[in-house]
Image: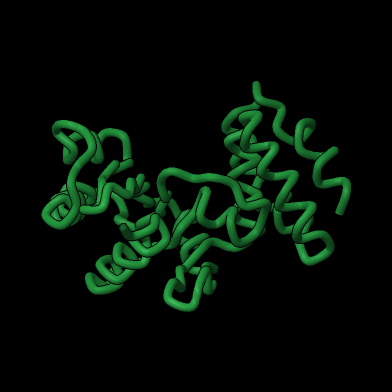
Length: 186
């Protein structure tokens, strides 16, 4: 049976074959930049812009099983397309449209997870920003592992600059107060 990473490689080839811009985020990127942990699905950020979501979703579900009913409408309304590969590997494909999402994809780089699996993942700083913005306990724990593993290689100033406009969207979370003790270790 193919692993999640092998299935991710197949999805990557599918997306690249369409000449779409994308990168892996979430648990797969955490395997590269933080403390590896069990992940049951893979998260992808796929640049669709606004208005192209339905067409892209249709093309994807022609090749991958949707995990919910009316997946095209769900993708349009929620900007996420949950699908499954033939081997049961699950993917949550975020339909990116904002400039900062495109910039994350543009900064992505390849990483060899094994001799046969090379995936395009977001940068450590971008993953740190996403984890800080999510601000759930498990995301803050993931952020701690990124900081611990990357240490001085992590650009704290860049993280704070990229996070600032996002944190303003959720002032009730008080994200800077929660993450400064974590980033203070840099």
